[in-house]
Image (cartoon, rainbow over all chains, first blue to last red; front, side, top):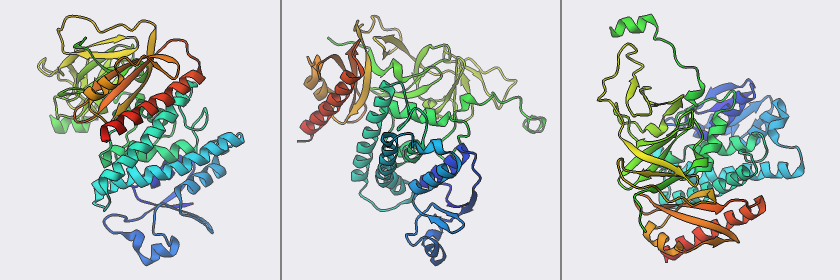
Length: 224
Length: 201
């Protein structure tokens, strides 16, 4: 499996993160999204006419939507991440996969505006992002009232991975997460999963890592 | 009745080992809970390079800055600088602290050395905190005397934030079942929409 990837893309990070959580091997093929705009090149358009990333290629299968890529990775590697135990859970996962596009179109677009200078009505985007985050916050609180924390089941599913990156990076687009306590706890639960990996702007839980030992001798000598 | 104690969060939203950002008028705070469960509220600024300590991490009873790992004990004093492991950090390196109390499962903060204690809403427990995009004084006036929502007894605490908005901390009487609390959660969302629309028009 080849993932056409850009390190600063939250949508690509969804795929890298799930692959890591599932211990599924994927080959990364970096795309020079910025500043090279390689995704607009004729070669890339031949692969994905929409000119978007991520793209996952597995033999003849080419997937260009992150929700579909997450679904495929889980179906191949770890069925329980699909959240298909019963019709209700399955529908909930589908709903969150679709919802994640609202986060992309609002918080994600605000982030591209602020970080890479993309055009957009920034005030409107922030209002839309706030609406989406409020909906997410209310839904996670409802899960907490039932003793859970993950969006669609008592365990993490692709629904959580689909929504996590753009929610976590909302501050990059000028949308504060300070007043979203349930989102904070949910993100913490995701960051605590075995196999969790970082992307720039989303760090791991240092407190779960062993305390670093004494510095290597070579560093100590240089600083002395 | 005014109090110097300001509600900044609900106890349930800060687990042991967590640091979160919070706000007082004029101050950004880090509120964090040690592994042993003790809560603390400090300036949200590492004395080293000014990084927000709320991005930091808790190990045991210490809060560490995410930037270079400078580590602070519960008295706010720096106890370790990882890049200089043999150095005992000077006592002058410390983070300013605020007084903090947990009552009725609310985290209250006040400037240090003030007399008095926060109100104890006996029989109530923290339910939800949410932001309202409207000035605190208007919201406080609008919800004053609001004691029932969706059939539940509630206490509504308004916390002013810098700029235009505020946080609403909702306490509910103990003992409601999930269905009642689902109704309360919806009613709070409706209340927020109503308050924001009233301010916008």
